[in-house]
Amino acid sequence: MRIGIVCHPTFGGSGVLATELAAFLARQGHSVHVISYAMPARMDVFQPDLYFHEVQVQDYPLFQYQPYDLALSSMMVQVVQREKLDLLHVHYAIPHAYASYMARKILEDQGVVIPVVTTLHGTDITLVGKHPSYKPAVCFSIEHSSAVTAVSESLRRDTERIFNIRKRIRVIPNFVDLERYGRCTTDTRSKVAPDGMPIVVHVSNFRKVKRIQDVIDIFARVRAEIPARLVLVGDGPERTRAEEDIAARGLNDDVRWMGKSTDVERILSMSDVFLLPSESESFGLAALEAMASYVPVVATLTGGIPEVIDHGECGYLEPVGDTKAMARDVLDILTTPGKREEMGQKARIKAEQFAMAAVGAQYIQLYQKLLDEQAR
Ligand code: GMT
Image 1 (cartoon, protein in one colour):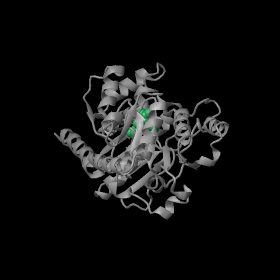
Image 2 (image 1 turned 90 degrees about the horizontal axis):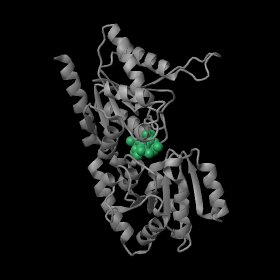
Image 3 (image 1 turned 45 degrees about the horizontal axis):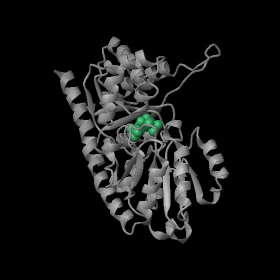
Image 4 (image 1 turned 180 degrees about the vertical axis):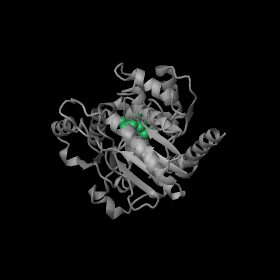
């Protein structure tokens, strides 16, 4: 098949999943065209049958906001026509589902019919999409997609509750390429944590929903009890406040900032516990990547996280904001002999339920179903 993948080129979440899916499909022999406003962080430009098309947005002094939706719809039309695409798969409803609806209408006008799959990722529904300034357009564009998927049962329920969607929403979870994750050698660890002290890690886009202040409070409570290092990967609007909080608590020497490192696998391979105390998470892709690296996760009991992490088995789940309980969980994992290794093994086994090949096959099956229906 000739497939178009539309996504945000983000460091985390939907951008990562979309890019990993594109590479997987290309390795399966499909011709895959990724469309976005910038090259996605994890895009492998040397991957055969995988192509990137950058959306060109023409600015004009009259505009206060650049009309990205128009430019994206136009780019979709051009790529479908030029590359003779069979199907479009858009990730994150805003603005992709809406822009793809316009693209489909333009193409239909030219006698080209193409299915569009919309995958809902989380904040497009639970945070941004439900806002009155977007809700009508988001609801319409989801309803008028050829097929809709959500990355967790929790997100499917949220979508049906918030948007009163009549269309069937299939659940196809996020996935992980297990071959890319594992454990590092000890000398690599010593670059981050001397004397073999434990490494607590957090990876995110440092938005308010991630509750970075809780990551720091949890670590401060742990550090008050045992020597440890906190590794922070990513960047975003909450970073400055986090740096100030860390300095105010006298933790600068115990914290390593890694920024938007493209070497997340290596950082996770040397880590001992992954923290994800989010306000809400439809799935928690970063936590799944940690689990694939044999890292137990301490997270919040919210959204789709319980579909990924079994409490007491591959980590612990606590109420949002309960940093005292989460710190206790981290200390339990780090100070109970053999616990980290035992939970790490269970985390990896759980991660294997989200293996890329099995989940990727579900998307291919859905694409084929839509194309067969169209052919009838
Ligand atoms: O985590 C973010 O805020 C980024 C966001 C995104 O859409 O890029 O992540 C969402 O999609 C990820 C991939 O499906 C999920 O693993 C995250 O849980 C989800 N984030 C939230 O629901 C807050």
